[in-house]
Amino acid sequence: MKEFPKDLITQSEAARLRGVSPEAIADLIRRGRLDTYEVAGRLHVRRSDIQKFKAQPGGRPPKTEKK
Image 1: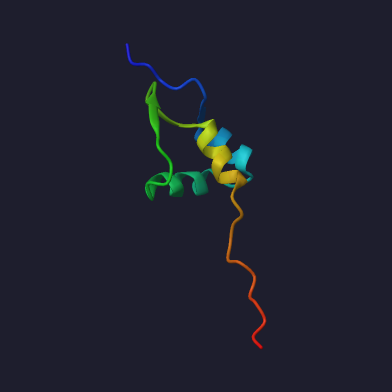
Image 2 (image 1 turned 60 degrees about the vertical axis):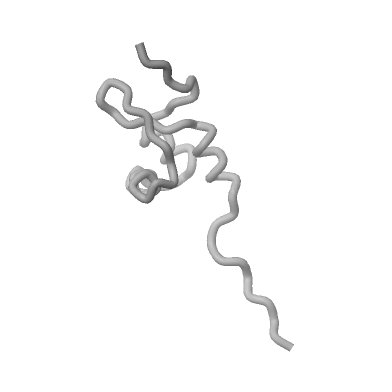
């Protein structure tokens, strides 16, 4: 029997945790930014991986004034 990490969650749960749509999570998976685990025919991600993404600030840094 295959061993899986204990902190696996569904894509929907990951989306709720991160405050984004399930499609945004699917996009991260497609781009290879999130590792997936197939359990009972469904893809799951690690909660710890989602929390790492959540902790990172998004977007561009603010512009600095030119002198």
